[in-house]
Length: 257
Image (cartoon, rainbow, N blue to C red; front, top):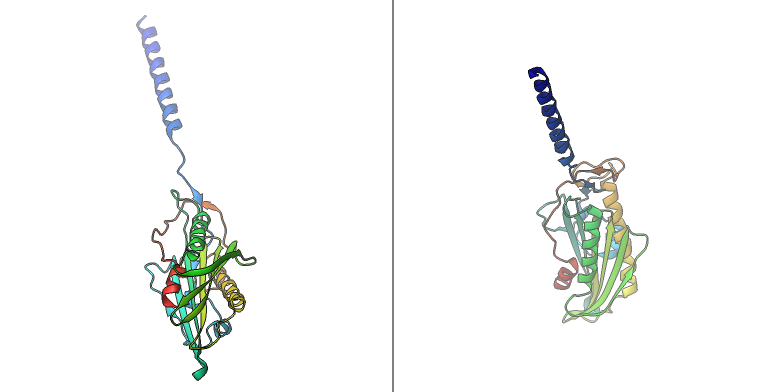
């Protein structure tokens, strides 16, 4: 009788331990993951455009652009050029150009880098149309430049003259490229053609996008993490994302013009 009771007691103990182990295993959940951002680097903003393109857009600019300040060159950068072509008593032609780059990493709490970049892209387009004093503002999609691109144009009347503003916002994967370009005829010179300026800014945007792609193809001189020969979208744990926001280039354009 004692032996039988002991065996019965041991058997019950084993069953209880097995149930507890199963419950523990079921409670373990997989760690959250998010698709890795495609691009891990940015090119130097002042090297995104060729000398020929700069010669067309800002012919009287200095040889080098003015580097914008950045708290993290791995995720953001900008460069600007200004040109004043003085034609004596006939007046002068003024041009100002700015290229801005912003890269988004994927984040398990905020989402994929592409999604975050698209949200910023939408905000940039809205901000470009909301500049104080802007007249005849128009926005139109642009094809053949990144995954999404929109050109915003408007007129801006200032004491120096009538300025024609072109802001082209482009998203290429998880990077947003914003090219601001404006021109004015000063002291009696003719106001430049908006169509001519638009054609030039589209060329600049395509080159800037190509520079981002090159910086992540293994053959560029980008800033940031090492780029893979062929950027992939394989799922992985999210790297940290930049939480700082840049000032809208379109608003700064109005101030510098």
